[in-house]
Length: 271
Image (cartoon, rainbow, N blue to C red; front, side, top):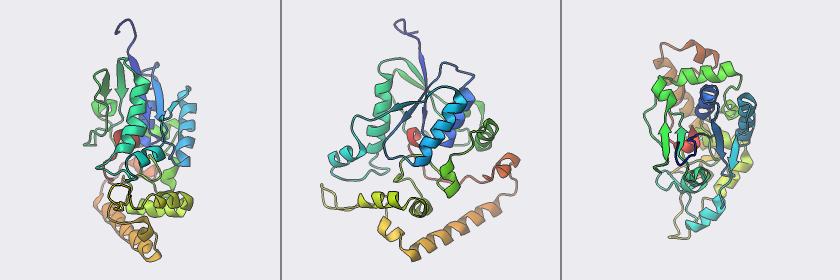
């Protein structure tokens, strides 16, 4: 208790597998848990469907926050320079600040879904009234456990994994692999075009920055380049499978025997 007020228990949902599994894992352990989703307004359609499915299982609503200003507002403020892993203003303005505003000055325990088999910290608030805890890491739960929790609960994996997306977050997330950009092009060509439209000379120095760092979306979508990206991805996936001699039965049954290595994303976005 602080100033007569109880400590709040808050779990931020990203629309991804790990935070969803953590919500299921903690549902009966912390009945007073508050579930919150920070809507950047650029999410995939499957994200909203997954949150609705999770709400049904949890038996309580997920509170949605909306940033006071949109992505496009901040895009102009930052000189029309798109965010990147070196310029994560999108996470700061659209995810972290709405989270801290939702918390206010209350003492809060913030539950983070980083697993025991991950070596990352991510983008977590450093405000002194917010204490981050990591139940999966503390209890030794790894990827196979997350698949088991989601499978046994009936919630399952997010539907965007059906077409090959590995992470939650905005449709133009700069942490996407090139194969994921190809899959976005094939699944949601309209969203691909919207993402491509942001790749233009910025207002600061006239340079053009790309979502995929070294390659524009206009180049990625060329037929010969798409074929090359697919070919390399298939070869990489085949090589990984050959190296895996022992496979966890639950992962195999769930058809997720290998979790692809992906660049570290923002914790509050991608769990």
